[in-house]
Length: 527
Image 1 (cartoon, rainbow, N blue to C red):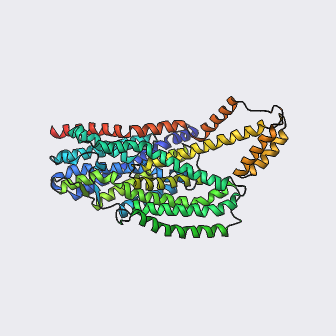
Image 2: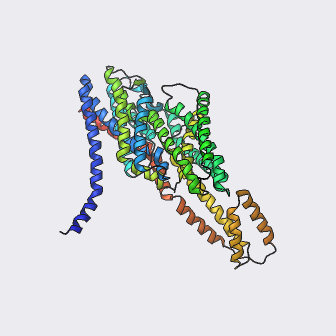
Image 3: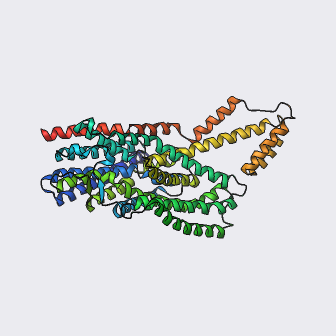
């Protein structure tokens, strides 16, 4: 065998070695959790607790691999951050959020999905339900991550608790009101996220990129946009990030975060004024102004996510620990020991670092093309939608909001591109056939004009063209075909269908798996 064939074999096996390394590191973490839990010991429940802790660590890694990608995916896709830098920042802030502000108590029955009173007669059955839910939720997230589909971890664990509860006590145990609210969030979350992201992108286009002097418009608008970003992120962090350790009302959070926003606005405005000749009069020049805010946004979103969603990983585990340590008593709320929170924090960070890149690429680059301005709009959608929905009592998913924001940005770009295409066709239609020089001269002036000036130019062109003979024109079929080309370029329909399908089947899939696992556990324990 010559050297060339050896090199070919090396390249062919390189991917497999990387995958084996990641699986090996994950396995070492699970073994470490097992050994630590075994050393702690809990008497008769030691074996159950060891198994639960291992599954809890597995669940935490899957949350890191799937859910956290939504916080950094747009920033990575827009080239504001490298993939490696995003993984480090997200891992550190996710763990910090979980350990610093993760809260001391978490409900043992997530979101009131099932009636806990129907499980109080048997602590053993309760533990089986929690074990089944934890494992089923983790398995579903693992599958979704493997295919690159960003799904809601909250919906995964909720569906798993539902399925295990029904397997244990029948359909009477289900709180169908809560389930209907969760089902409605499948529509509410992505639609709200898409609308908010699209609204911000349209504002940026009208106020900056559609202006003749983009640099001057950016110096005026970017400090306002970043100041508003600081306000919304400050309120989001106070309400969602530190909400468990520092209780503030909605109005108080807005007041405190507004003070922070004023400081940020002043700093950004001073820098924009100082760098008056540095900002290029191009989209790429304006985009650079959003790079640093996006890095901070990714860090703050990760911190808030770690503090708020760590319960998805350790909630059922904390419930099992509480039952075992309390001698079989089932409480509506279970205190989370520090070591349990540590399992969740380390697992989330490790799962993101090992298996997160696949979903990050899906969100950041495989749905639509992103730049820093578009990533800013998605980050704003992620915070503002959660704040508004929480005040209105609407159930939303941060995953669905972020992905909906990506699609919202893409579909708005399609709409605007289609409009621009129609305008170009209209300009050509109102010039004599073959008068290419006149068309080119008009387009030069048209491209330099503002949005309002473009409208005036088109109206004037239509009036003047009435005196011309039959002009050159694009047929309706040609225009429709061109719009379809734009749509294929700007938003991938295959990703939309795949992700929507994964969202719809998350709850029933995790519920079915949890029910099967519950029957399997009960069969093994009884026999």
